[in-house]
Image (cartoon, rainbow, N blue to C red; front, side, top):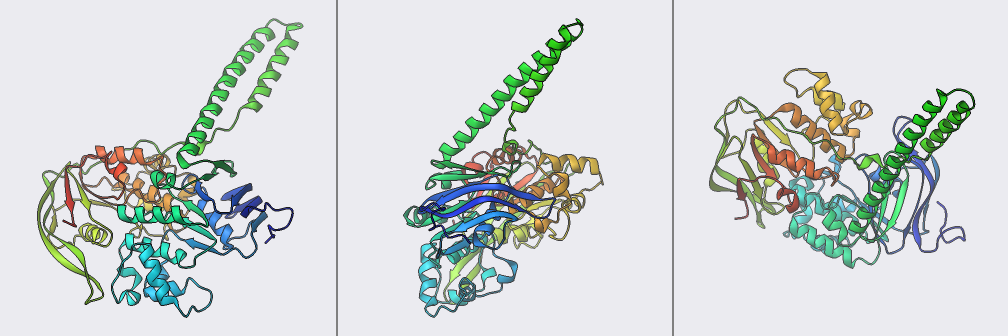
Length: 499
């Protein structure tokens, strides 16, 4: 790596990209001669469409990936810690102690008190046996806090956070926000939580999925979003003006060409001028388009009551067992066709476990009516076969094989032919989310179960998704920690597991 202390580097930079080009094979280019600097002590957000390569930028900074061309310059001696989006499957069976040990290249002899301190920072207060607890026994929100803690325990000069608010409840997000405001070192964050980002961001790196360049903006998050939108409007206006002038010149050229004689020379100049204006047209940032408005069809054969609850199982802390102990609570809820239920509760109370058991038909105290087809959006996408291609995954859920309809639905979720040929496991988390929604459209379920459907999804898509859920005419059970998203959806009943 190049030493930024040398005269050619910027003295206030900890990371810089110089004409960096990277691709996953010739069919999947990500960056093309990208340039940007990350200033010491700054709080930077990385923006871009799902699948644009935001996480790839992190991997290039950590050295897990190497550029095809150009240079990634890291300040000499800079320590970097990366909080990943999800815990790798091969780490799920580790104890908490082992999980944190893997964060260091060499053995750390005083790691236990450091684990205690960092768990306190992420508001994951445990019991006396937390160090021996298996990682997979934690809820999705608690695993998100473990991921964050695994980066913080290293006390890095540069903290890379990839979707850190996913699965976090309100208290967890508030705790993280305050920590980042007080953090004196450099932070770079990938997130789609606009309110969270605006609370600490002072700059944005914008990755354009079509030009594969990185644009750098200064200002808070909302300021930058406004700047980008104004620029897009300006580009559209310029193109509209040029298109009008081009057409006028073509019309005049055709008129003069029919006159013959010297008028043909005038017509030629008109055509040349039209061609020059075509060259002036700018490529408007096309990735700013959202997914198309969509409808999730309901299972038409379903009538009356869809699911009935007489009890639910919640998890309560148990110091004696060193785990969360299941506790059965009596409830009385009947969910009919067209009714939407919001399931609430803090991280660790068992929301995801309950949804999974309902989807699998194994929930104690919950009975789904016979013949009801369940559409299940799982927050970790583990109900998708990661070895299947997107094409195989989508076509497999259709009651009637209709490739034309499947491709039309997929296109609405920005799933192009290249993505269609890609294995699910090779997609970004955001792209997996869009595939999961496309599957729900093709399934036409009678009961829709959604576990944190905003995770990883580009914020531009969320109003479209909220509208589709609001209009869904089947029965629905929703878990979401994003109040603004929930406020856009019709909710007929709420079950608060904490109460």
